[in-house]
Length: 400
Image (cartoon, rainbow, N blue to C red; front, side):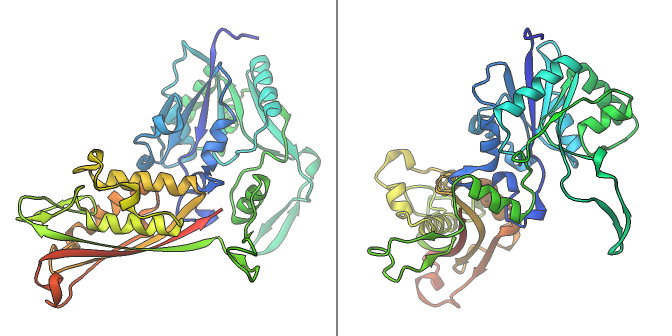
């Protein structure tokens, strides 16, 4: 076997994972404080000859190389094949002779199976793990069975799939030239007449695709869907605490001259701004407090004290990123945010979408999960007199 070359591992993590029905793509769902994607990447850590190339949704690329500690992060494409190819283009043929492609949502890959795929790839030029089908397979049309397939020769294909660099490049080039999209990389080899060799896969190496798969994954990672609370201290009745928790946040800042008006990470056109130790982004502060409240943690005044000079004039969206990291470490996934800005000004309608984009990117959640509204107090009180701006937020968080 040729160990003079390194091995590139492409992890396809750019999909939306919509079938699982969560607010974030499935690869970013946290289980026990760690994303599914992180579990998957960790399978390849500590193997000196392997370098990981990661394909992510474009909005998740910034800062991802440092976060995940991988060789390269690229933006994915419209299809899995495009995403993998975007990563493949970053691989130097002079340095890497072998390429593995693995699904981000297969975190249970064993070292034994990885070794088998690598060995077969180096021997034969390709390798895919397969498992026998235990169920009878039928074709169905309009809810009626049309045929029963002979399952003796049928196999379910898993990842990682391994390839010699030159063979995979040839397959990609042909597919791109002819505008062909295959179900996986091995299908591209089959199409150009290259042999695809198999190794015995493992049932535990399943792909998390549905809500049921996610439940199984949580059980396998040592969690349960509901946790009993301490009978004596926290919950004398011994009831079961659900995994859904709600947090609320409220903040208010005084309008003063000589300051910028930063709302939801947007520098609003205004002759004056909001007073505060940081940038005084009242909307972002309310959202941060709501998230921290859902996790049962102290408010932003404790986490980011106003007597600490490192937070002076800091961009609050950066603090929101830190709060997002905290909630994920606690095993939480933000389901949705509903926030309201309260005051006679500024008018947020022209900037709402930009605010939603800033907040969703900072928290790495779907923009559709963020709602921002504006209202006035009909000229009543200090808000009606335009002496300040307030904001409130409600956040729903799912803990695993």
